[in-house]
Length: 372
Image 1 (cartoon, rainbow, N blue to C red):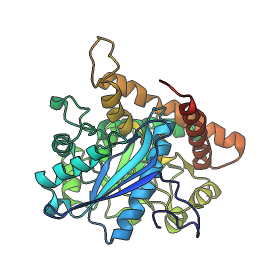
Image 2 (cartoon, rainbow, N blue to C red):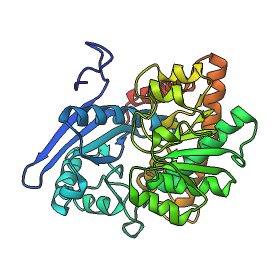
Image 3 (cartoon, rainbow, N blue to C red):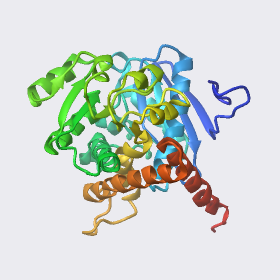
């Protein structure tokens, strides 16, 4: 994939408005900021700090992720566009205050076209540092007036989407008595595990990090832990929840998967176009990733909009209860998408894309009406 064309074929445009390459040699910063669309408002999306194998891999990821954010924000009903950023490198070795502040200055240079937040490899304290150089950093700590850890509502939204999928498939919103496989016990997977156990589900999980596995073993001894994702997907599970990196669903995975439902927090779960059809052919109900994992972006978006919108008690700024109420609406959104897919005879991923594109076109068109 290049900046102007995709892997779909020569001349197939990515559709991005702007891609910015940022470098600060003294700190080792190498970052790419991709703005897919500002049709609905400023682009919002997290910053991923990851040791990509190559610059091409970093570019491919940021272009795919930023597009997904545009669709996610549209389906979440937010007046925000889609963007994403990646910092190329190992955060354990490269992450420093000067590097994060240099990155913050690049974000500030865009004048509000892009709001950043946490993602893989970046955390709330990092956003506090980035915010020292830019007004457009969200996901800051509560002490700094921010939304805090967005993985909390990401997991809550995934749980709501899972409930909607369970109702669509089995006629009940409860996961009690069901076995859910979670791939990835990171920031989101941990919260999701708790929600599922509270609902009466059994959980089987895996993670590449020994630290995460040790956490699960000590915190939730009732969780069954398996060696890797390849073992997990072959388990007798009812629901599969990919909660790590993208590309979790490819041809081989879908062929081996035992679950009846896929609903997880990872972005860009479909490894390539056409996987959604393979899932449908196998009778596996797919809850589109960018729909069910939108709780986190809803949380950090409230940090942006809360500055101008008072909460029920008249306070300005982030309001967790307001954000959680909106994230709870992911249940209804997922429900509508699954029903729409049935009516139109298309996979849920296609139905979701159509609804997101319609909102970006119809609401985005209103910006042509000039305001003084």
